[in-house]
Image (cartoon, rainbow, N blue to C red; front, side, top):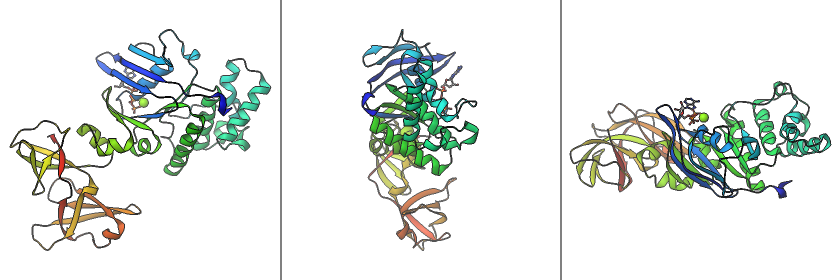
Length: 354
Ligand SMILES: Nc1ncnc2c1ncn2[C@@H]1O[C@H](COP(=O)(O)OP(=O)(O)OP(=O)(O)O)[C@@H](O)[C@H]1O
Ligand SMILES: [Mg+2]
């Protein structure tokens, strides 16, 4: 079956969707290449589900253009678009078995029962549920139910797969396993996929590219590494990866004083004036920590072991702790209560107005 699936090109061009005065999508433009997995990442209410619903054809009340393989979707109904969708909550039909759920889309399309059952068997095997085919949803775990939902979405051999927070109801371990399975399956089938989450770690782990959304706008779309290392706005920098926001003072047009160090203001910062009190954005891995006997020193308050890395929370006399990350080996030298001195190991930092 894998051979007859193919990934489509998907294009949103200046798509705007308003609900009263709220712009759920604001001139939203995005192109997905065939076989690509793109994730929309952003806070609650930023327009992620709206984008999926418009692409699926469930919501037709928008301006702008939506195309699949160069063809406008304006006059194409949801049922004719050949799109598979998995929703956030378990959305299986409760009175049907796993197999019947997977067969549903094929039944609607008039595929005969022998063929349907064969396809359902293949798909359930693909998602590791061969032996659960005759169970109803209430006899399956959450992770198993989402696997059935995935198999059901794939059964119609969709051109495009839409996944709206398919993992959010699952516990951490199942979440990671199923996430990797989705990615493996998606790559193998070469199916163009639009994935939605508000979990940045999940987005970074599963995607070819990630689009960060804010109030209906696509703030930046890029490969995960670039989003982290070259954020184009303080919103993206703050949303992708942990970042400290440290009170700082603008010394001159291009320089800022932060933790008693003078650093360059990096590009894509908000525009600020000399003498202005701002916040500097500093990644935990760019803060180095050294023991100190000075009476002006800061104090180690928390130590969180993260495996190979350890995150240390330090009280420097501000409202919030500053977090530094270092190898766990290095962190062994530090204890809570220790007096320490901080150093920002970066030449430039992003700043934002307070
Ligand atoms: N049917 C509707 N009627 C009125 N407003 C709506 C409707 N659907 C969505 N909205 C509004 O549009 C905006 C975007 O909603 P959307 O569901 O796309 O957000 P989201 O990014 O998926 O959020 P979440 O992470 O919470 O699922 C929100 O402000 C929401 O309140
Ligand atoms: Mg949503």
